[in-house]
Amino acid sequence: MDFTGKTALVTGSSRGIGESIAIRLSLLGIHVVITGRDAAKLDALKHKMQSSGAEPHVIIADMSNPATPEQLIRETIQRFGRLDILVNNAGYAVSKSLSTTEPEEWDRMMAINARGPFFLCKEAIPYLQKSDCATIVNISSVVGRLGYEKQAAYAASKHALMGFSKVLAREVQPLGIRVHTIAPGGVATDMVKTMRSDIDTSSLIQPEEIADIVEFLLTYRGNAMIDNIDVRRSNGTPFA
Image 1: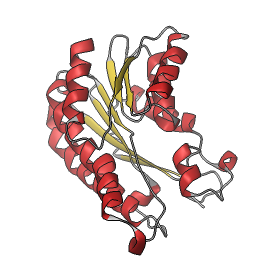
Image 2: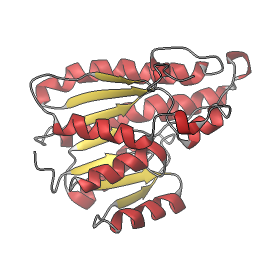
Image 3: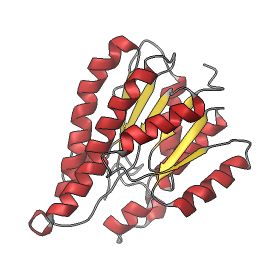
Image 4: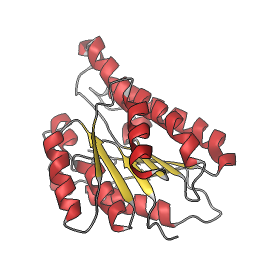
């Protein structure tokens, strides 16, 4: 498929996995909307992508804000007139036991990791269904199916993401929209550094490897549908 002129929206694209995915999509000739809270990092990414001939559109937004999903879709359509690919990558986590997790931390994790993607998908569907390559990729985590100490709230939010993704895939299949989830173990990102400072990030999955998977999902559009991809480290362990 020729992706030239298609449009993608990538949340949490100021760093890590989101940044790598945004760069990869732009190299496929896709117009990319990059969004996040860090204006400086998004500006740096914009200039980096421009050096390769891309012209990304930047939207400063916080996925914990209930108004953000509508804003992102509205501004994407105003800028490019279409939406073909949605990557829900923005994430938030804290490393705390269940007994020490505060209500506001729970609320923020659920807002960014579950509610935001849920309603962003809802806002995107009317435009995605017009595309011949309509794709939603939700970036989950190994904790969306396993449990780790001091990650109860984070695990709950990722289980929620996985759950609604399964239902969404069934609901939009008649519209020609494909829904994929990618559930990686430890990826060398800033989030992992804050969650597990004891781990040598050089041994972890690299963000570019997740971008490889996204590219495969987009370019492979045969009769076989891939629902979820679990990604482990080469040593066989999902995280540690």
